[in-house]
Amino acid sequence: MTDLEKNIEDAFRSLPIAPPTGMGIPYEWLIPGMGRQLSLMKPVSHQRSPCESTKRRLIDLQRNARLICEDAAAITLIPLQLRLSIIGIAHGELPTLRPIAGRGAPPKAQAAQIARTVAQHYYGLTGKRPTRVTPVDDGKAYSPFRKLLAEIYRLLEVNASADNQAKAAIAWLNTNCPDH
Image 1 (cartoon, rainbow, N blue to C red):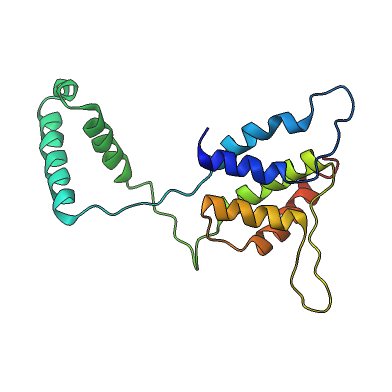
Image 2 (image 1 turned 180 degrees about the horizontal axis):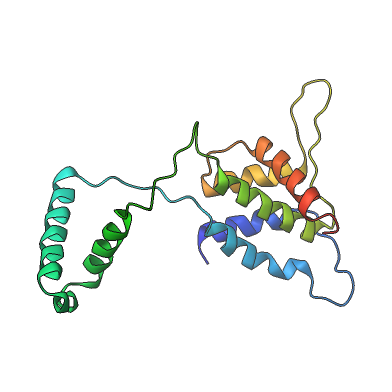
């Protein structure tokens, strides 16, 4: 278990956990799986490679692609990673595949998926649907669910508004899981 998984588990264990109902397994037993599941959702930071390194890789790919064009049986001589790169480039250049272009910033699908997952686990653990309360006087929303989501976002280093994502996740849960 990694430190990240342990911290996520601790965040869920801090909730008021409802006693088990019926004959099924207690939802609390699933907490270790929640830590693993959410830690795998952590955004990956992509590092740029230096220009010279990229040039060397492209020249190597070009040389190996020529080798394949001259003799198809030569593909077995090329290392697997290079074969996969060449095939990926070939498929990327098909004229029928056009890049999808949209307007504005890309949607934060990963942050939304994390919020939905946390909402489902929150409901399973506490037995209460996640809520978000906005007081009239200062307008700052609060709730145990929003606090949990903010902590999970902090641990996973997700750059999104916990308040907005909590609002969307609650709406999604109410729409897609009415009896959940």
